Image (cartoon, rainbow, N blue to C red):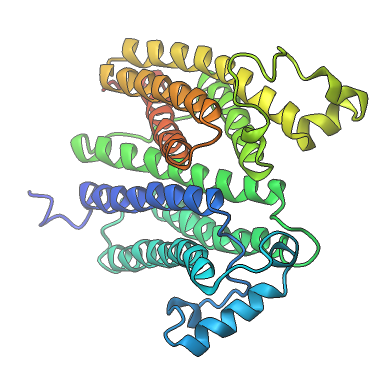
Length: 346
């Protein structure tokens, strides 16, 4: 019986989720551009429906600009900004929000269609609904992040930015895992979903810490602390920070310390990822091993280049893009070793 005559369609669902995952990678990239161009606070309201359309008249543009002039970022940093410059930063935040809406529709509408057709394999319906809920939560967290920069601050909270970015990457990893499960199921109707084992969880935690500090680095513009590598302004360690802050306070709030942790924890992540790649290859997936090595290798080089360039926008965006690809590759590797534990290869 062909897949098209059978009500359960794991391969079709996997293809649909691959499109959604691609859109999430795209929005992560646009989010990086939005951050690096300081565009995130240009839209000061959250209009879920009416916000779909940008300002269409000069009067509407002037109205949006007047709203922006009321927030601290304009008053303390961008005083005197031209309308043309405002339109530029508005464009990136608008595209970011528009993509979020597109992703929501691209997930929800096919999900309803597959559910109506009873094409979702048993055990996957709740997982897909959970991903939809997380997507909705991501929108709420996005506004929660933006709102932190509209009253007393000239920028968004780096903690809220981290929550926003990490949830997006978690959704991306969960989508990757689900796609891989469904592709295995399409090949083998008796396949049972992969499980996250202890080693895979450990790698995920190590990568999570690296991504967290990457988000903190972006949120506090900590990449601008120095343009040197491997030293930081002639030093191995920014010890002067500890003269004015506690270790914990410095580790989560000080740009220099956050930059230092991000650049050196990366090597802990590299060791973990090499071990993961070796296990994935031993489990029979050379492709996953190559993807992991390629992603972290390019990511390390981009990270160094971004710092030494004084955070060139193109390099910074590429660094965030490859970071998303690294999440996909890591999820792939962890999935492979989870299948091996249960007796599955490939």
